[in-house]
Length: 120
Image (cartoon, rainbow, N blue to C red; front, side):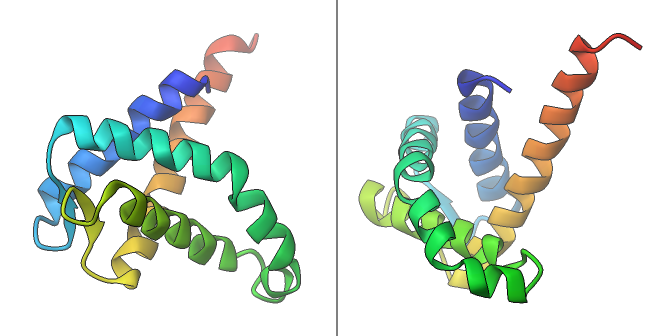
């Protein structure tokens, strides 16, 4: 999946989650969803690898489930950078739920793109 496709997918996930859970996921506008998606991509590129490496023992102990907590932390950090009145979550558990939904949707979109370009 290209960078632009992932950016669009994450933006659509943020908008969809704010429509489905309006009291738990706050997205002020479409522009704020795009900005949050861009900030999240930068954080995933710079901060997430360091956190994943530091939490490797805990991640191995939980069979990889701790990676959802790290992703939720990245979402909370994105909310803090963008501003919680523009983009935010009501609790950390909602952030974990959004991180799980994002992982599932990104996996589906990535698999669709892989199937499109393979011979078979």
